[in-house]
Amino acid sequence: MTEDKRLKKPVVSFILLTNIIFWPLFLLVGITKLLHFPTWIFDVMLCISAWSSTFAFMFLFKRIYPGQSFIQFVKDRFKNKLNYSIVLTVSMIQIIIFLTMLFLISTNSEADSIFNRTTWGVLIYYVVKTIVSGPLGEELGWRGFALMELQKKYSPLKSSIIIGFWWGMWHLPIWFTTGFTGSNLINYVYCNFLFNSCHFTYSYKSKESFISKIL
Image 1 (tube, rainbow, N blue to C red):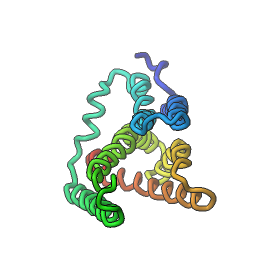
Image 2: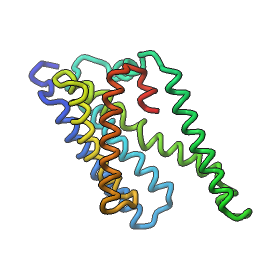
Image 3: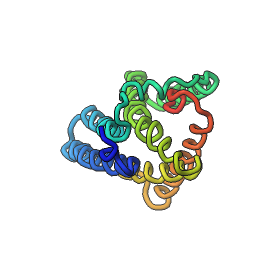
Image 4: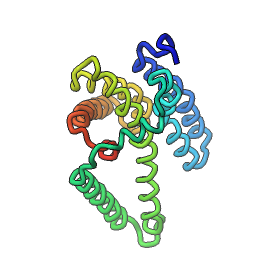
């Protein structure tokens, strides 16, 4: 590909295309909810919409990195050494949360309730859905590409704040579905923005495997 066909502002193009892909998909998510489709259809549509950033990056890849292989790019994101202490810590936290939820649901439900009979399946389903509709579909585009690209021009902290802001704006429609309103919603959005800005900076500084970032 000739140099004149290379994207001049790849991060801007990525953010725009991510939203262009996301909004029609998210509209379908809303339609499935309004028309009372089965919950699993709603979840599938939500997972697909969460992958909009990855779809956008895949579509733009050849114009961002002409002559490079997308598969090799993905492999390179996983080549850094895996920090097993972080993986163990995060896994233990997730297990504790999982068991706590199981205990609370079991002790606060009647013996023959659906919660007791299907708790394990429901929680496993929820964990898988959260991973697929969250970090697995988001990280490659936002941190694997956009954050790294911005750091060619700005400091890690400034790059993280920029990406954190646009990532938050992209997530805003989903946050409106959390049930929070008013100041609670503002605090929820602000905390997510602050946490992810710090997390983005740490991810750059730590230079760990992409698996750690997904976790």
